[in-house]
Image (cartoon, rainbow, N blue to C red; front, side):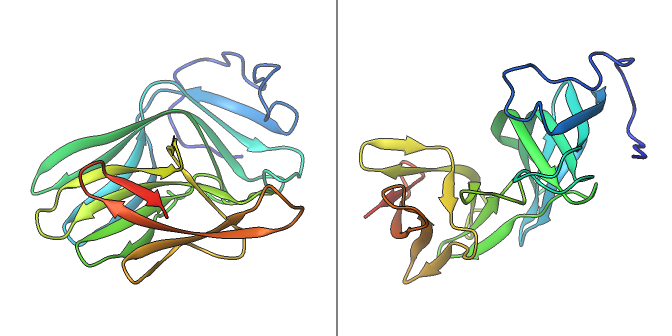
Amino acid sequence: MDHTLEETSQHDEVGTLTPDSPYSKVVQIDVYQETPTVRARIETDNGELYVVSNGKEAIGHVAIPSVLGVEGDYFYQGDYDVIYEHNQDKVVIKQLLDLVFVQPSEKPASFKKISFQAMDVFLLTPEYTASRGYNAYAFGIDKKSGEAFAITFKNAARVWETVNYEKVSTPENENEKLVVTTRDTRGEGDTLTVEYRFDRDSKQFIAE
């Protein structure tokens, strides 16, 4: 693989992941680098939303085809900042620690946009393949003020950083509620549809 990114650690543990890593048997690490690199981005109506590496990042590829991806898919792991640039202001709205990206190309991933009356929601799905559904982070941008913020998901008493959605469907807005079809763990291959209402004070989608 031809990487044009700056290498800052001369073969420091290249080719290895920690033994307890779920990726260690299928991923080959090619290089470590510390150059801030954008891994996802989207132009919004009011500015740019993007994800950039912060600190040491492992760069590699899928060496053995698996549920993670096909051979040659690009693998990135590290700490990342989610940044929103609006009216020449740059704001870090969330830090994603020890995050993994798996993508079919070196191009930055995009976000899925879902429009609501008062805000736009942007879903970031770092891994483009999934055996048990996709896990996505959510970010909102207020249409009136332009404020950007991270969104969490509350289901019963638990709060989640991500939402899981089933492989053949994507979350959508139905009557100002986020409707998500997810895997139902109570049965093999079953799915479950959940409706979330948005709470502006807590910046949460709350399951109903």
